[in-house]
Amino acid sequence: MGADHARVLAEEVPGAVVRVVCDAAADRARAVADAVGAADVEADGVAAIARADVDAVLVASPDPTHAPLTVAAVEAGKPVLCEKPLAPTAAEGRPVLEAEAKAGRRLVSLGFMRRFDPGYRAMKAALTEGRIGPAAMLHCLHRNVAAPPGFTGPMAITNSAPHEFDIARWLLDTDVAAISAFQPRLPTADGRAGGGPVAGPVVLVLETAAGPLVTVEVNTDAAYGYDVRGELVGRDGSVELAAPTDLRLNAGLSAATPFPADWRPRFAEAYRRQDIAWVRSIESGSPADGIASAWDGWQAARVAEAGVRALAEGRRVALDAEPPPALYA
Ligand SMILES: NC(=O)c1ccc[n+]([C@@H]2O[C@H](COP(=O)([O-])OP(=O)(O)OC[C@H]3O[C@@H](n4cnc5c(N)ncnc54)[C@H](O)[C@@H]3O)[C@@H](O)[C@H]2O)c1
Figure 1: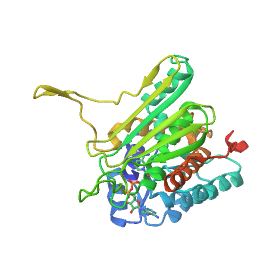
Figure 2: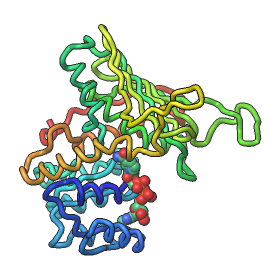
Figure 3: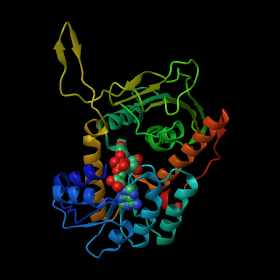
Figure 4: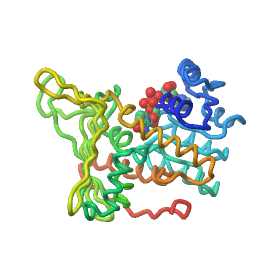
């Protein structure tokens, strides 16, 4: 993901220059730096953030490193675009809120790039323009070809589902009030019935403070392709995402629309628009319209944490209302 952001910033964002590429693996940093024409590489994130020739920071390292590196950027007074999630747990994300409160200004943007996807933007416009009446339900599907080794059901909730938590909050303009989590029982690899998956699909039901219900399927081992779907159902109609596609293949007595292998082609336009908006906001000094904040990241982390508990304990977990501090209101 970091390599893709580096390419977008270098090639598609006017005014942005990638100065330093940091990766704990030196060969990866060098390969990306060479590909985007960056002047230098670093192995240590905090050292990269502190450099005098670095004005702003994009964090796309593994999930548990997001909050510490984002705090380092805030303490250095540098704008930071942090990839989702803000943190695997709400407690790990809280220092980011505290650092911004101490700085007294918003320096953090969260990489919930779906807010910049033309499909989700059109869906939100259909709702706010009253074309489907008041929202009743949002149905979300998130499918990957195959999860990385060691990926678990709880990780599907803390790593993948935050996209859905955030898009639900953004589309419906409300917070999540309760979450329930379920997993189907599948045959084990050796064919025994009812073993239950390790990663497997996770199905979540979110109850929102404003009333609409949200269903989420996260299936990180869907095998057939990268597939994200969404349907917002209102009192008077519904609006569905139409996945962008370049072609339909007609052959062998059937018509087929190919799926991408991962998220990059599906959300290329969203990443591009998000990264452009982020850099423009640094120039203007005010947050980009619609970009997610540290507070949005923290809310998603709270919901994820409650979802993990709901799955482990097999029960509905309610979330207390947490009004945003003045910095984010
Ligand atoms: N917004 C999206 O749609 C989207 C899509 C994919 C991934 N992501 C997020 O991007 C992040 C990276 O995901 P990925 O798929 O590229 O993972 P990855 O494992 O392919 O890459 C992570 C890189 O970080 C490096 N690294 C590890 N620890 C580090 C540290 N402390 N400092 C600097 N570098 C370190 C690793 O060497 C590796 O090159 C994850 O947090 C993931 O949630 C977001």
